[in-house]
Amino acid sequence: MFQYQCLNPISKVGLDGFTNDYTKTEEIEKADAILVRSASMHEMKLPENIQAIARAGAGVNNIPLQDCAEQGIVVFNTPGANANGVKEMVIAGMLLASRDIVGGVEWVKQEKDNENVGKLAEKQKKQFAGCEIKGKKLGVIGLGAIGAMVANTAIYLGMEVYGYDPYISVDTAWKLSREIKHIANVEDIFKECDYITLHVPLLDSTKGMISKDSIAMMKDGVVLLNFSRDLLVDETALIDALETGKVKKYVTDFANPTVAGAKNTLVTPHLGASTAESEDNCACMAVKELRDYLENGNIHNSVNYPNCDMGICGVAGRIAINHKNVVNMISQFATVLGGAGMNISDMTNKSKGDYAYTLIDLETPATQEIIDKLDEIEGVLKVRIIK
Ligand SMILES: NC(=O)c1ccc[n+]([C@@H]2O[C@H](COP(=O)([O-])OP(=O)(O)OC[C@H]3O[C@@H](n4cnc5c(N)ncnc54)[C@H](O)[C@@H]3O)[C@@H](O)[C@H]2O)c1
Ligand SMILES: O=C(O)CC[C@@H](O)C(=O)O
Image (cartoon, rainbow, N blue to C red; front, side, top):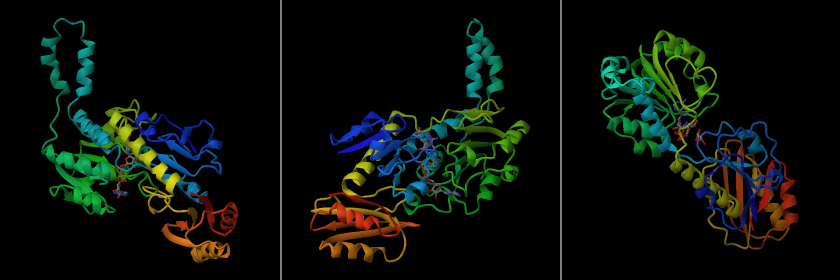
């Protein structure tokens, strides 16, 4: 039996993926797993009983990944599961920034009691007029699940698309339209593009990537779209650029006091993934990942531990060991198991950065005594009997 806690509302369609072996709890001390969306976990103390955290979404900047890894807690996300929802918001954002559609709608509302509203509209509409996106240059920074979809869709809309991602995955590269121009230096995007959209994770290396200097390189009247995270942009510098018209519009999904009432901003309340489809997709993927980890020890889509798969646990015994990626671990595990007369029938060891994971199938079920001995080995962070 397993227990899980939800730190945010999680789609029922996803939670229905848990079998009767799972119950929901409000007490973190009882939970084996946590499901979370955007709730910040940085100040939370995570008890030893927590085995895994699944972020029903892409960005994991709300989770202390390193601390979790140190505690042997595997953190998952759901890559691509909400990408279409965000892509549609980005396309909407480009269109809303191109003509003053929001201003026009507000104007009509204000004139609702004016019986000459139709006639007046014909005179007033020029103040809300703008341009089309067809033929304009769009720079996409970050060509992962969302960036790739945005880039491909913009090609269909007749835009000239420049794509920049020095770490692009082979899978995503295969999915990109051949019409997208591969940009090797992000400054070329700043200098050339009429619209620039950000689709990178918030990391130390990407924080503030849109700075006073990068804004200075941009074309006058550029539109900047940010559906990734607010801290990617030096918003104080951006507000100055919006005041002067250097940046025509800032479309962002992240409301904060700096941008909420600022001139020429279109701010939405973190709506990118707020569609029934995205919420269901993310929750279904998150639940599947948690179940496979808790029931079989397999890891798929972890952001702090390596992927590892030994299939469904149909053997007599299986143990999972989360440990530091240091020398001589496997031989120590084998010594403990061999000393107890336990025969290893299969084993996988994988590593990711400073952390590693070992799954061991045994010909007999593991005992608590063995687990305690494995736990004593220096560098071992967590040991779990799967069966
Ligand atoms: N507004 C929302 O509701 C919403 C929803 C989903 C995701 N997001 C945000 O969007 C981000 C991207 O999501 P995704 O699903 O496309 O993630 P992803 O992991 O599929 O793609 C991110 C891409 O950024 C690239 N990248 C990393 N550093 C880079 C750099 N310095 N320059 C250029 N490219 C770089 C990576 O190589 C990767 O291809 C998430 O991290 C999250 O912060 C927001
Ligand atoms: O859960 C949400 O609503 C937002 C998710 C989004 O920011 C993400 O990074 O996936």
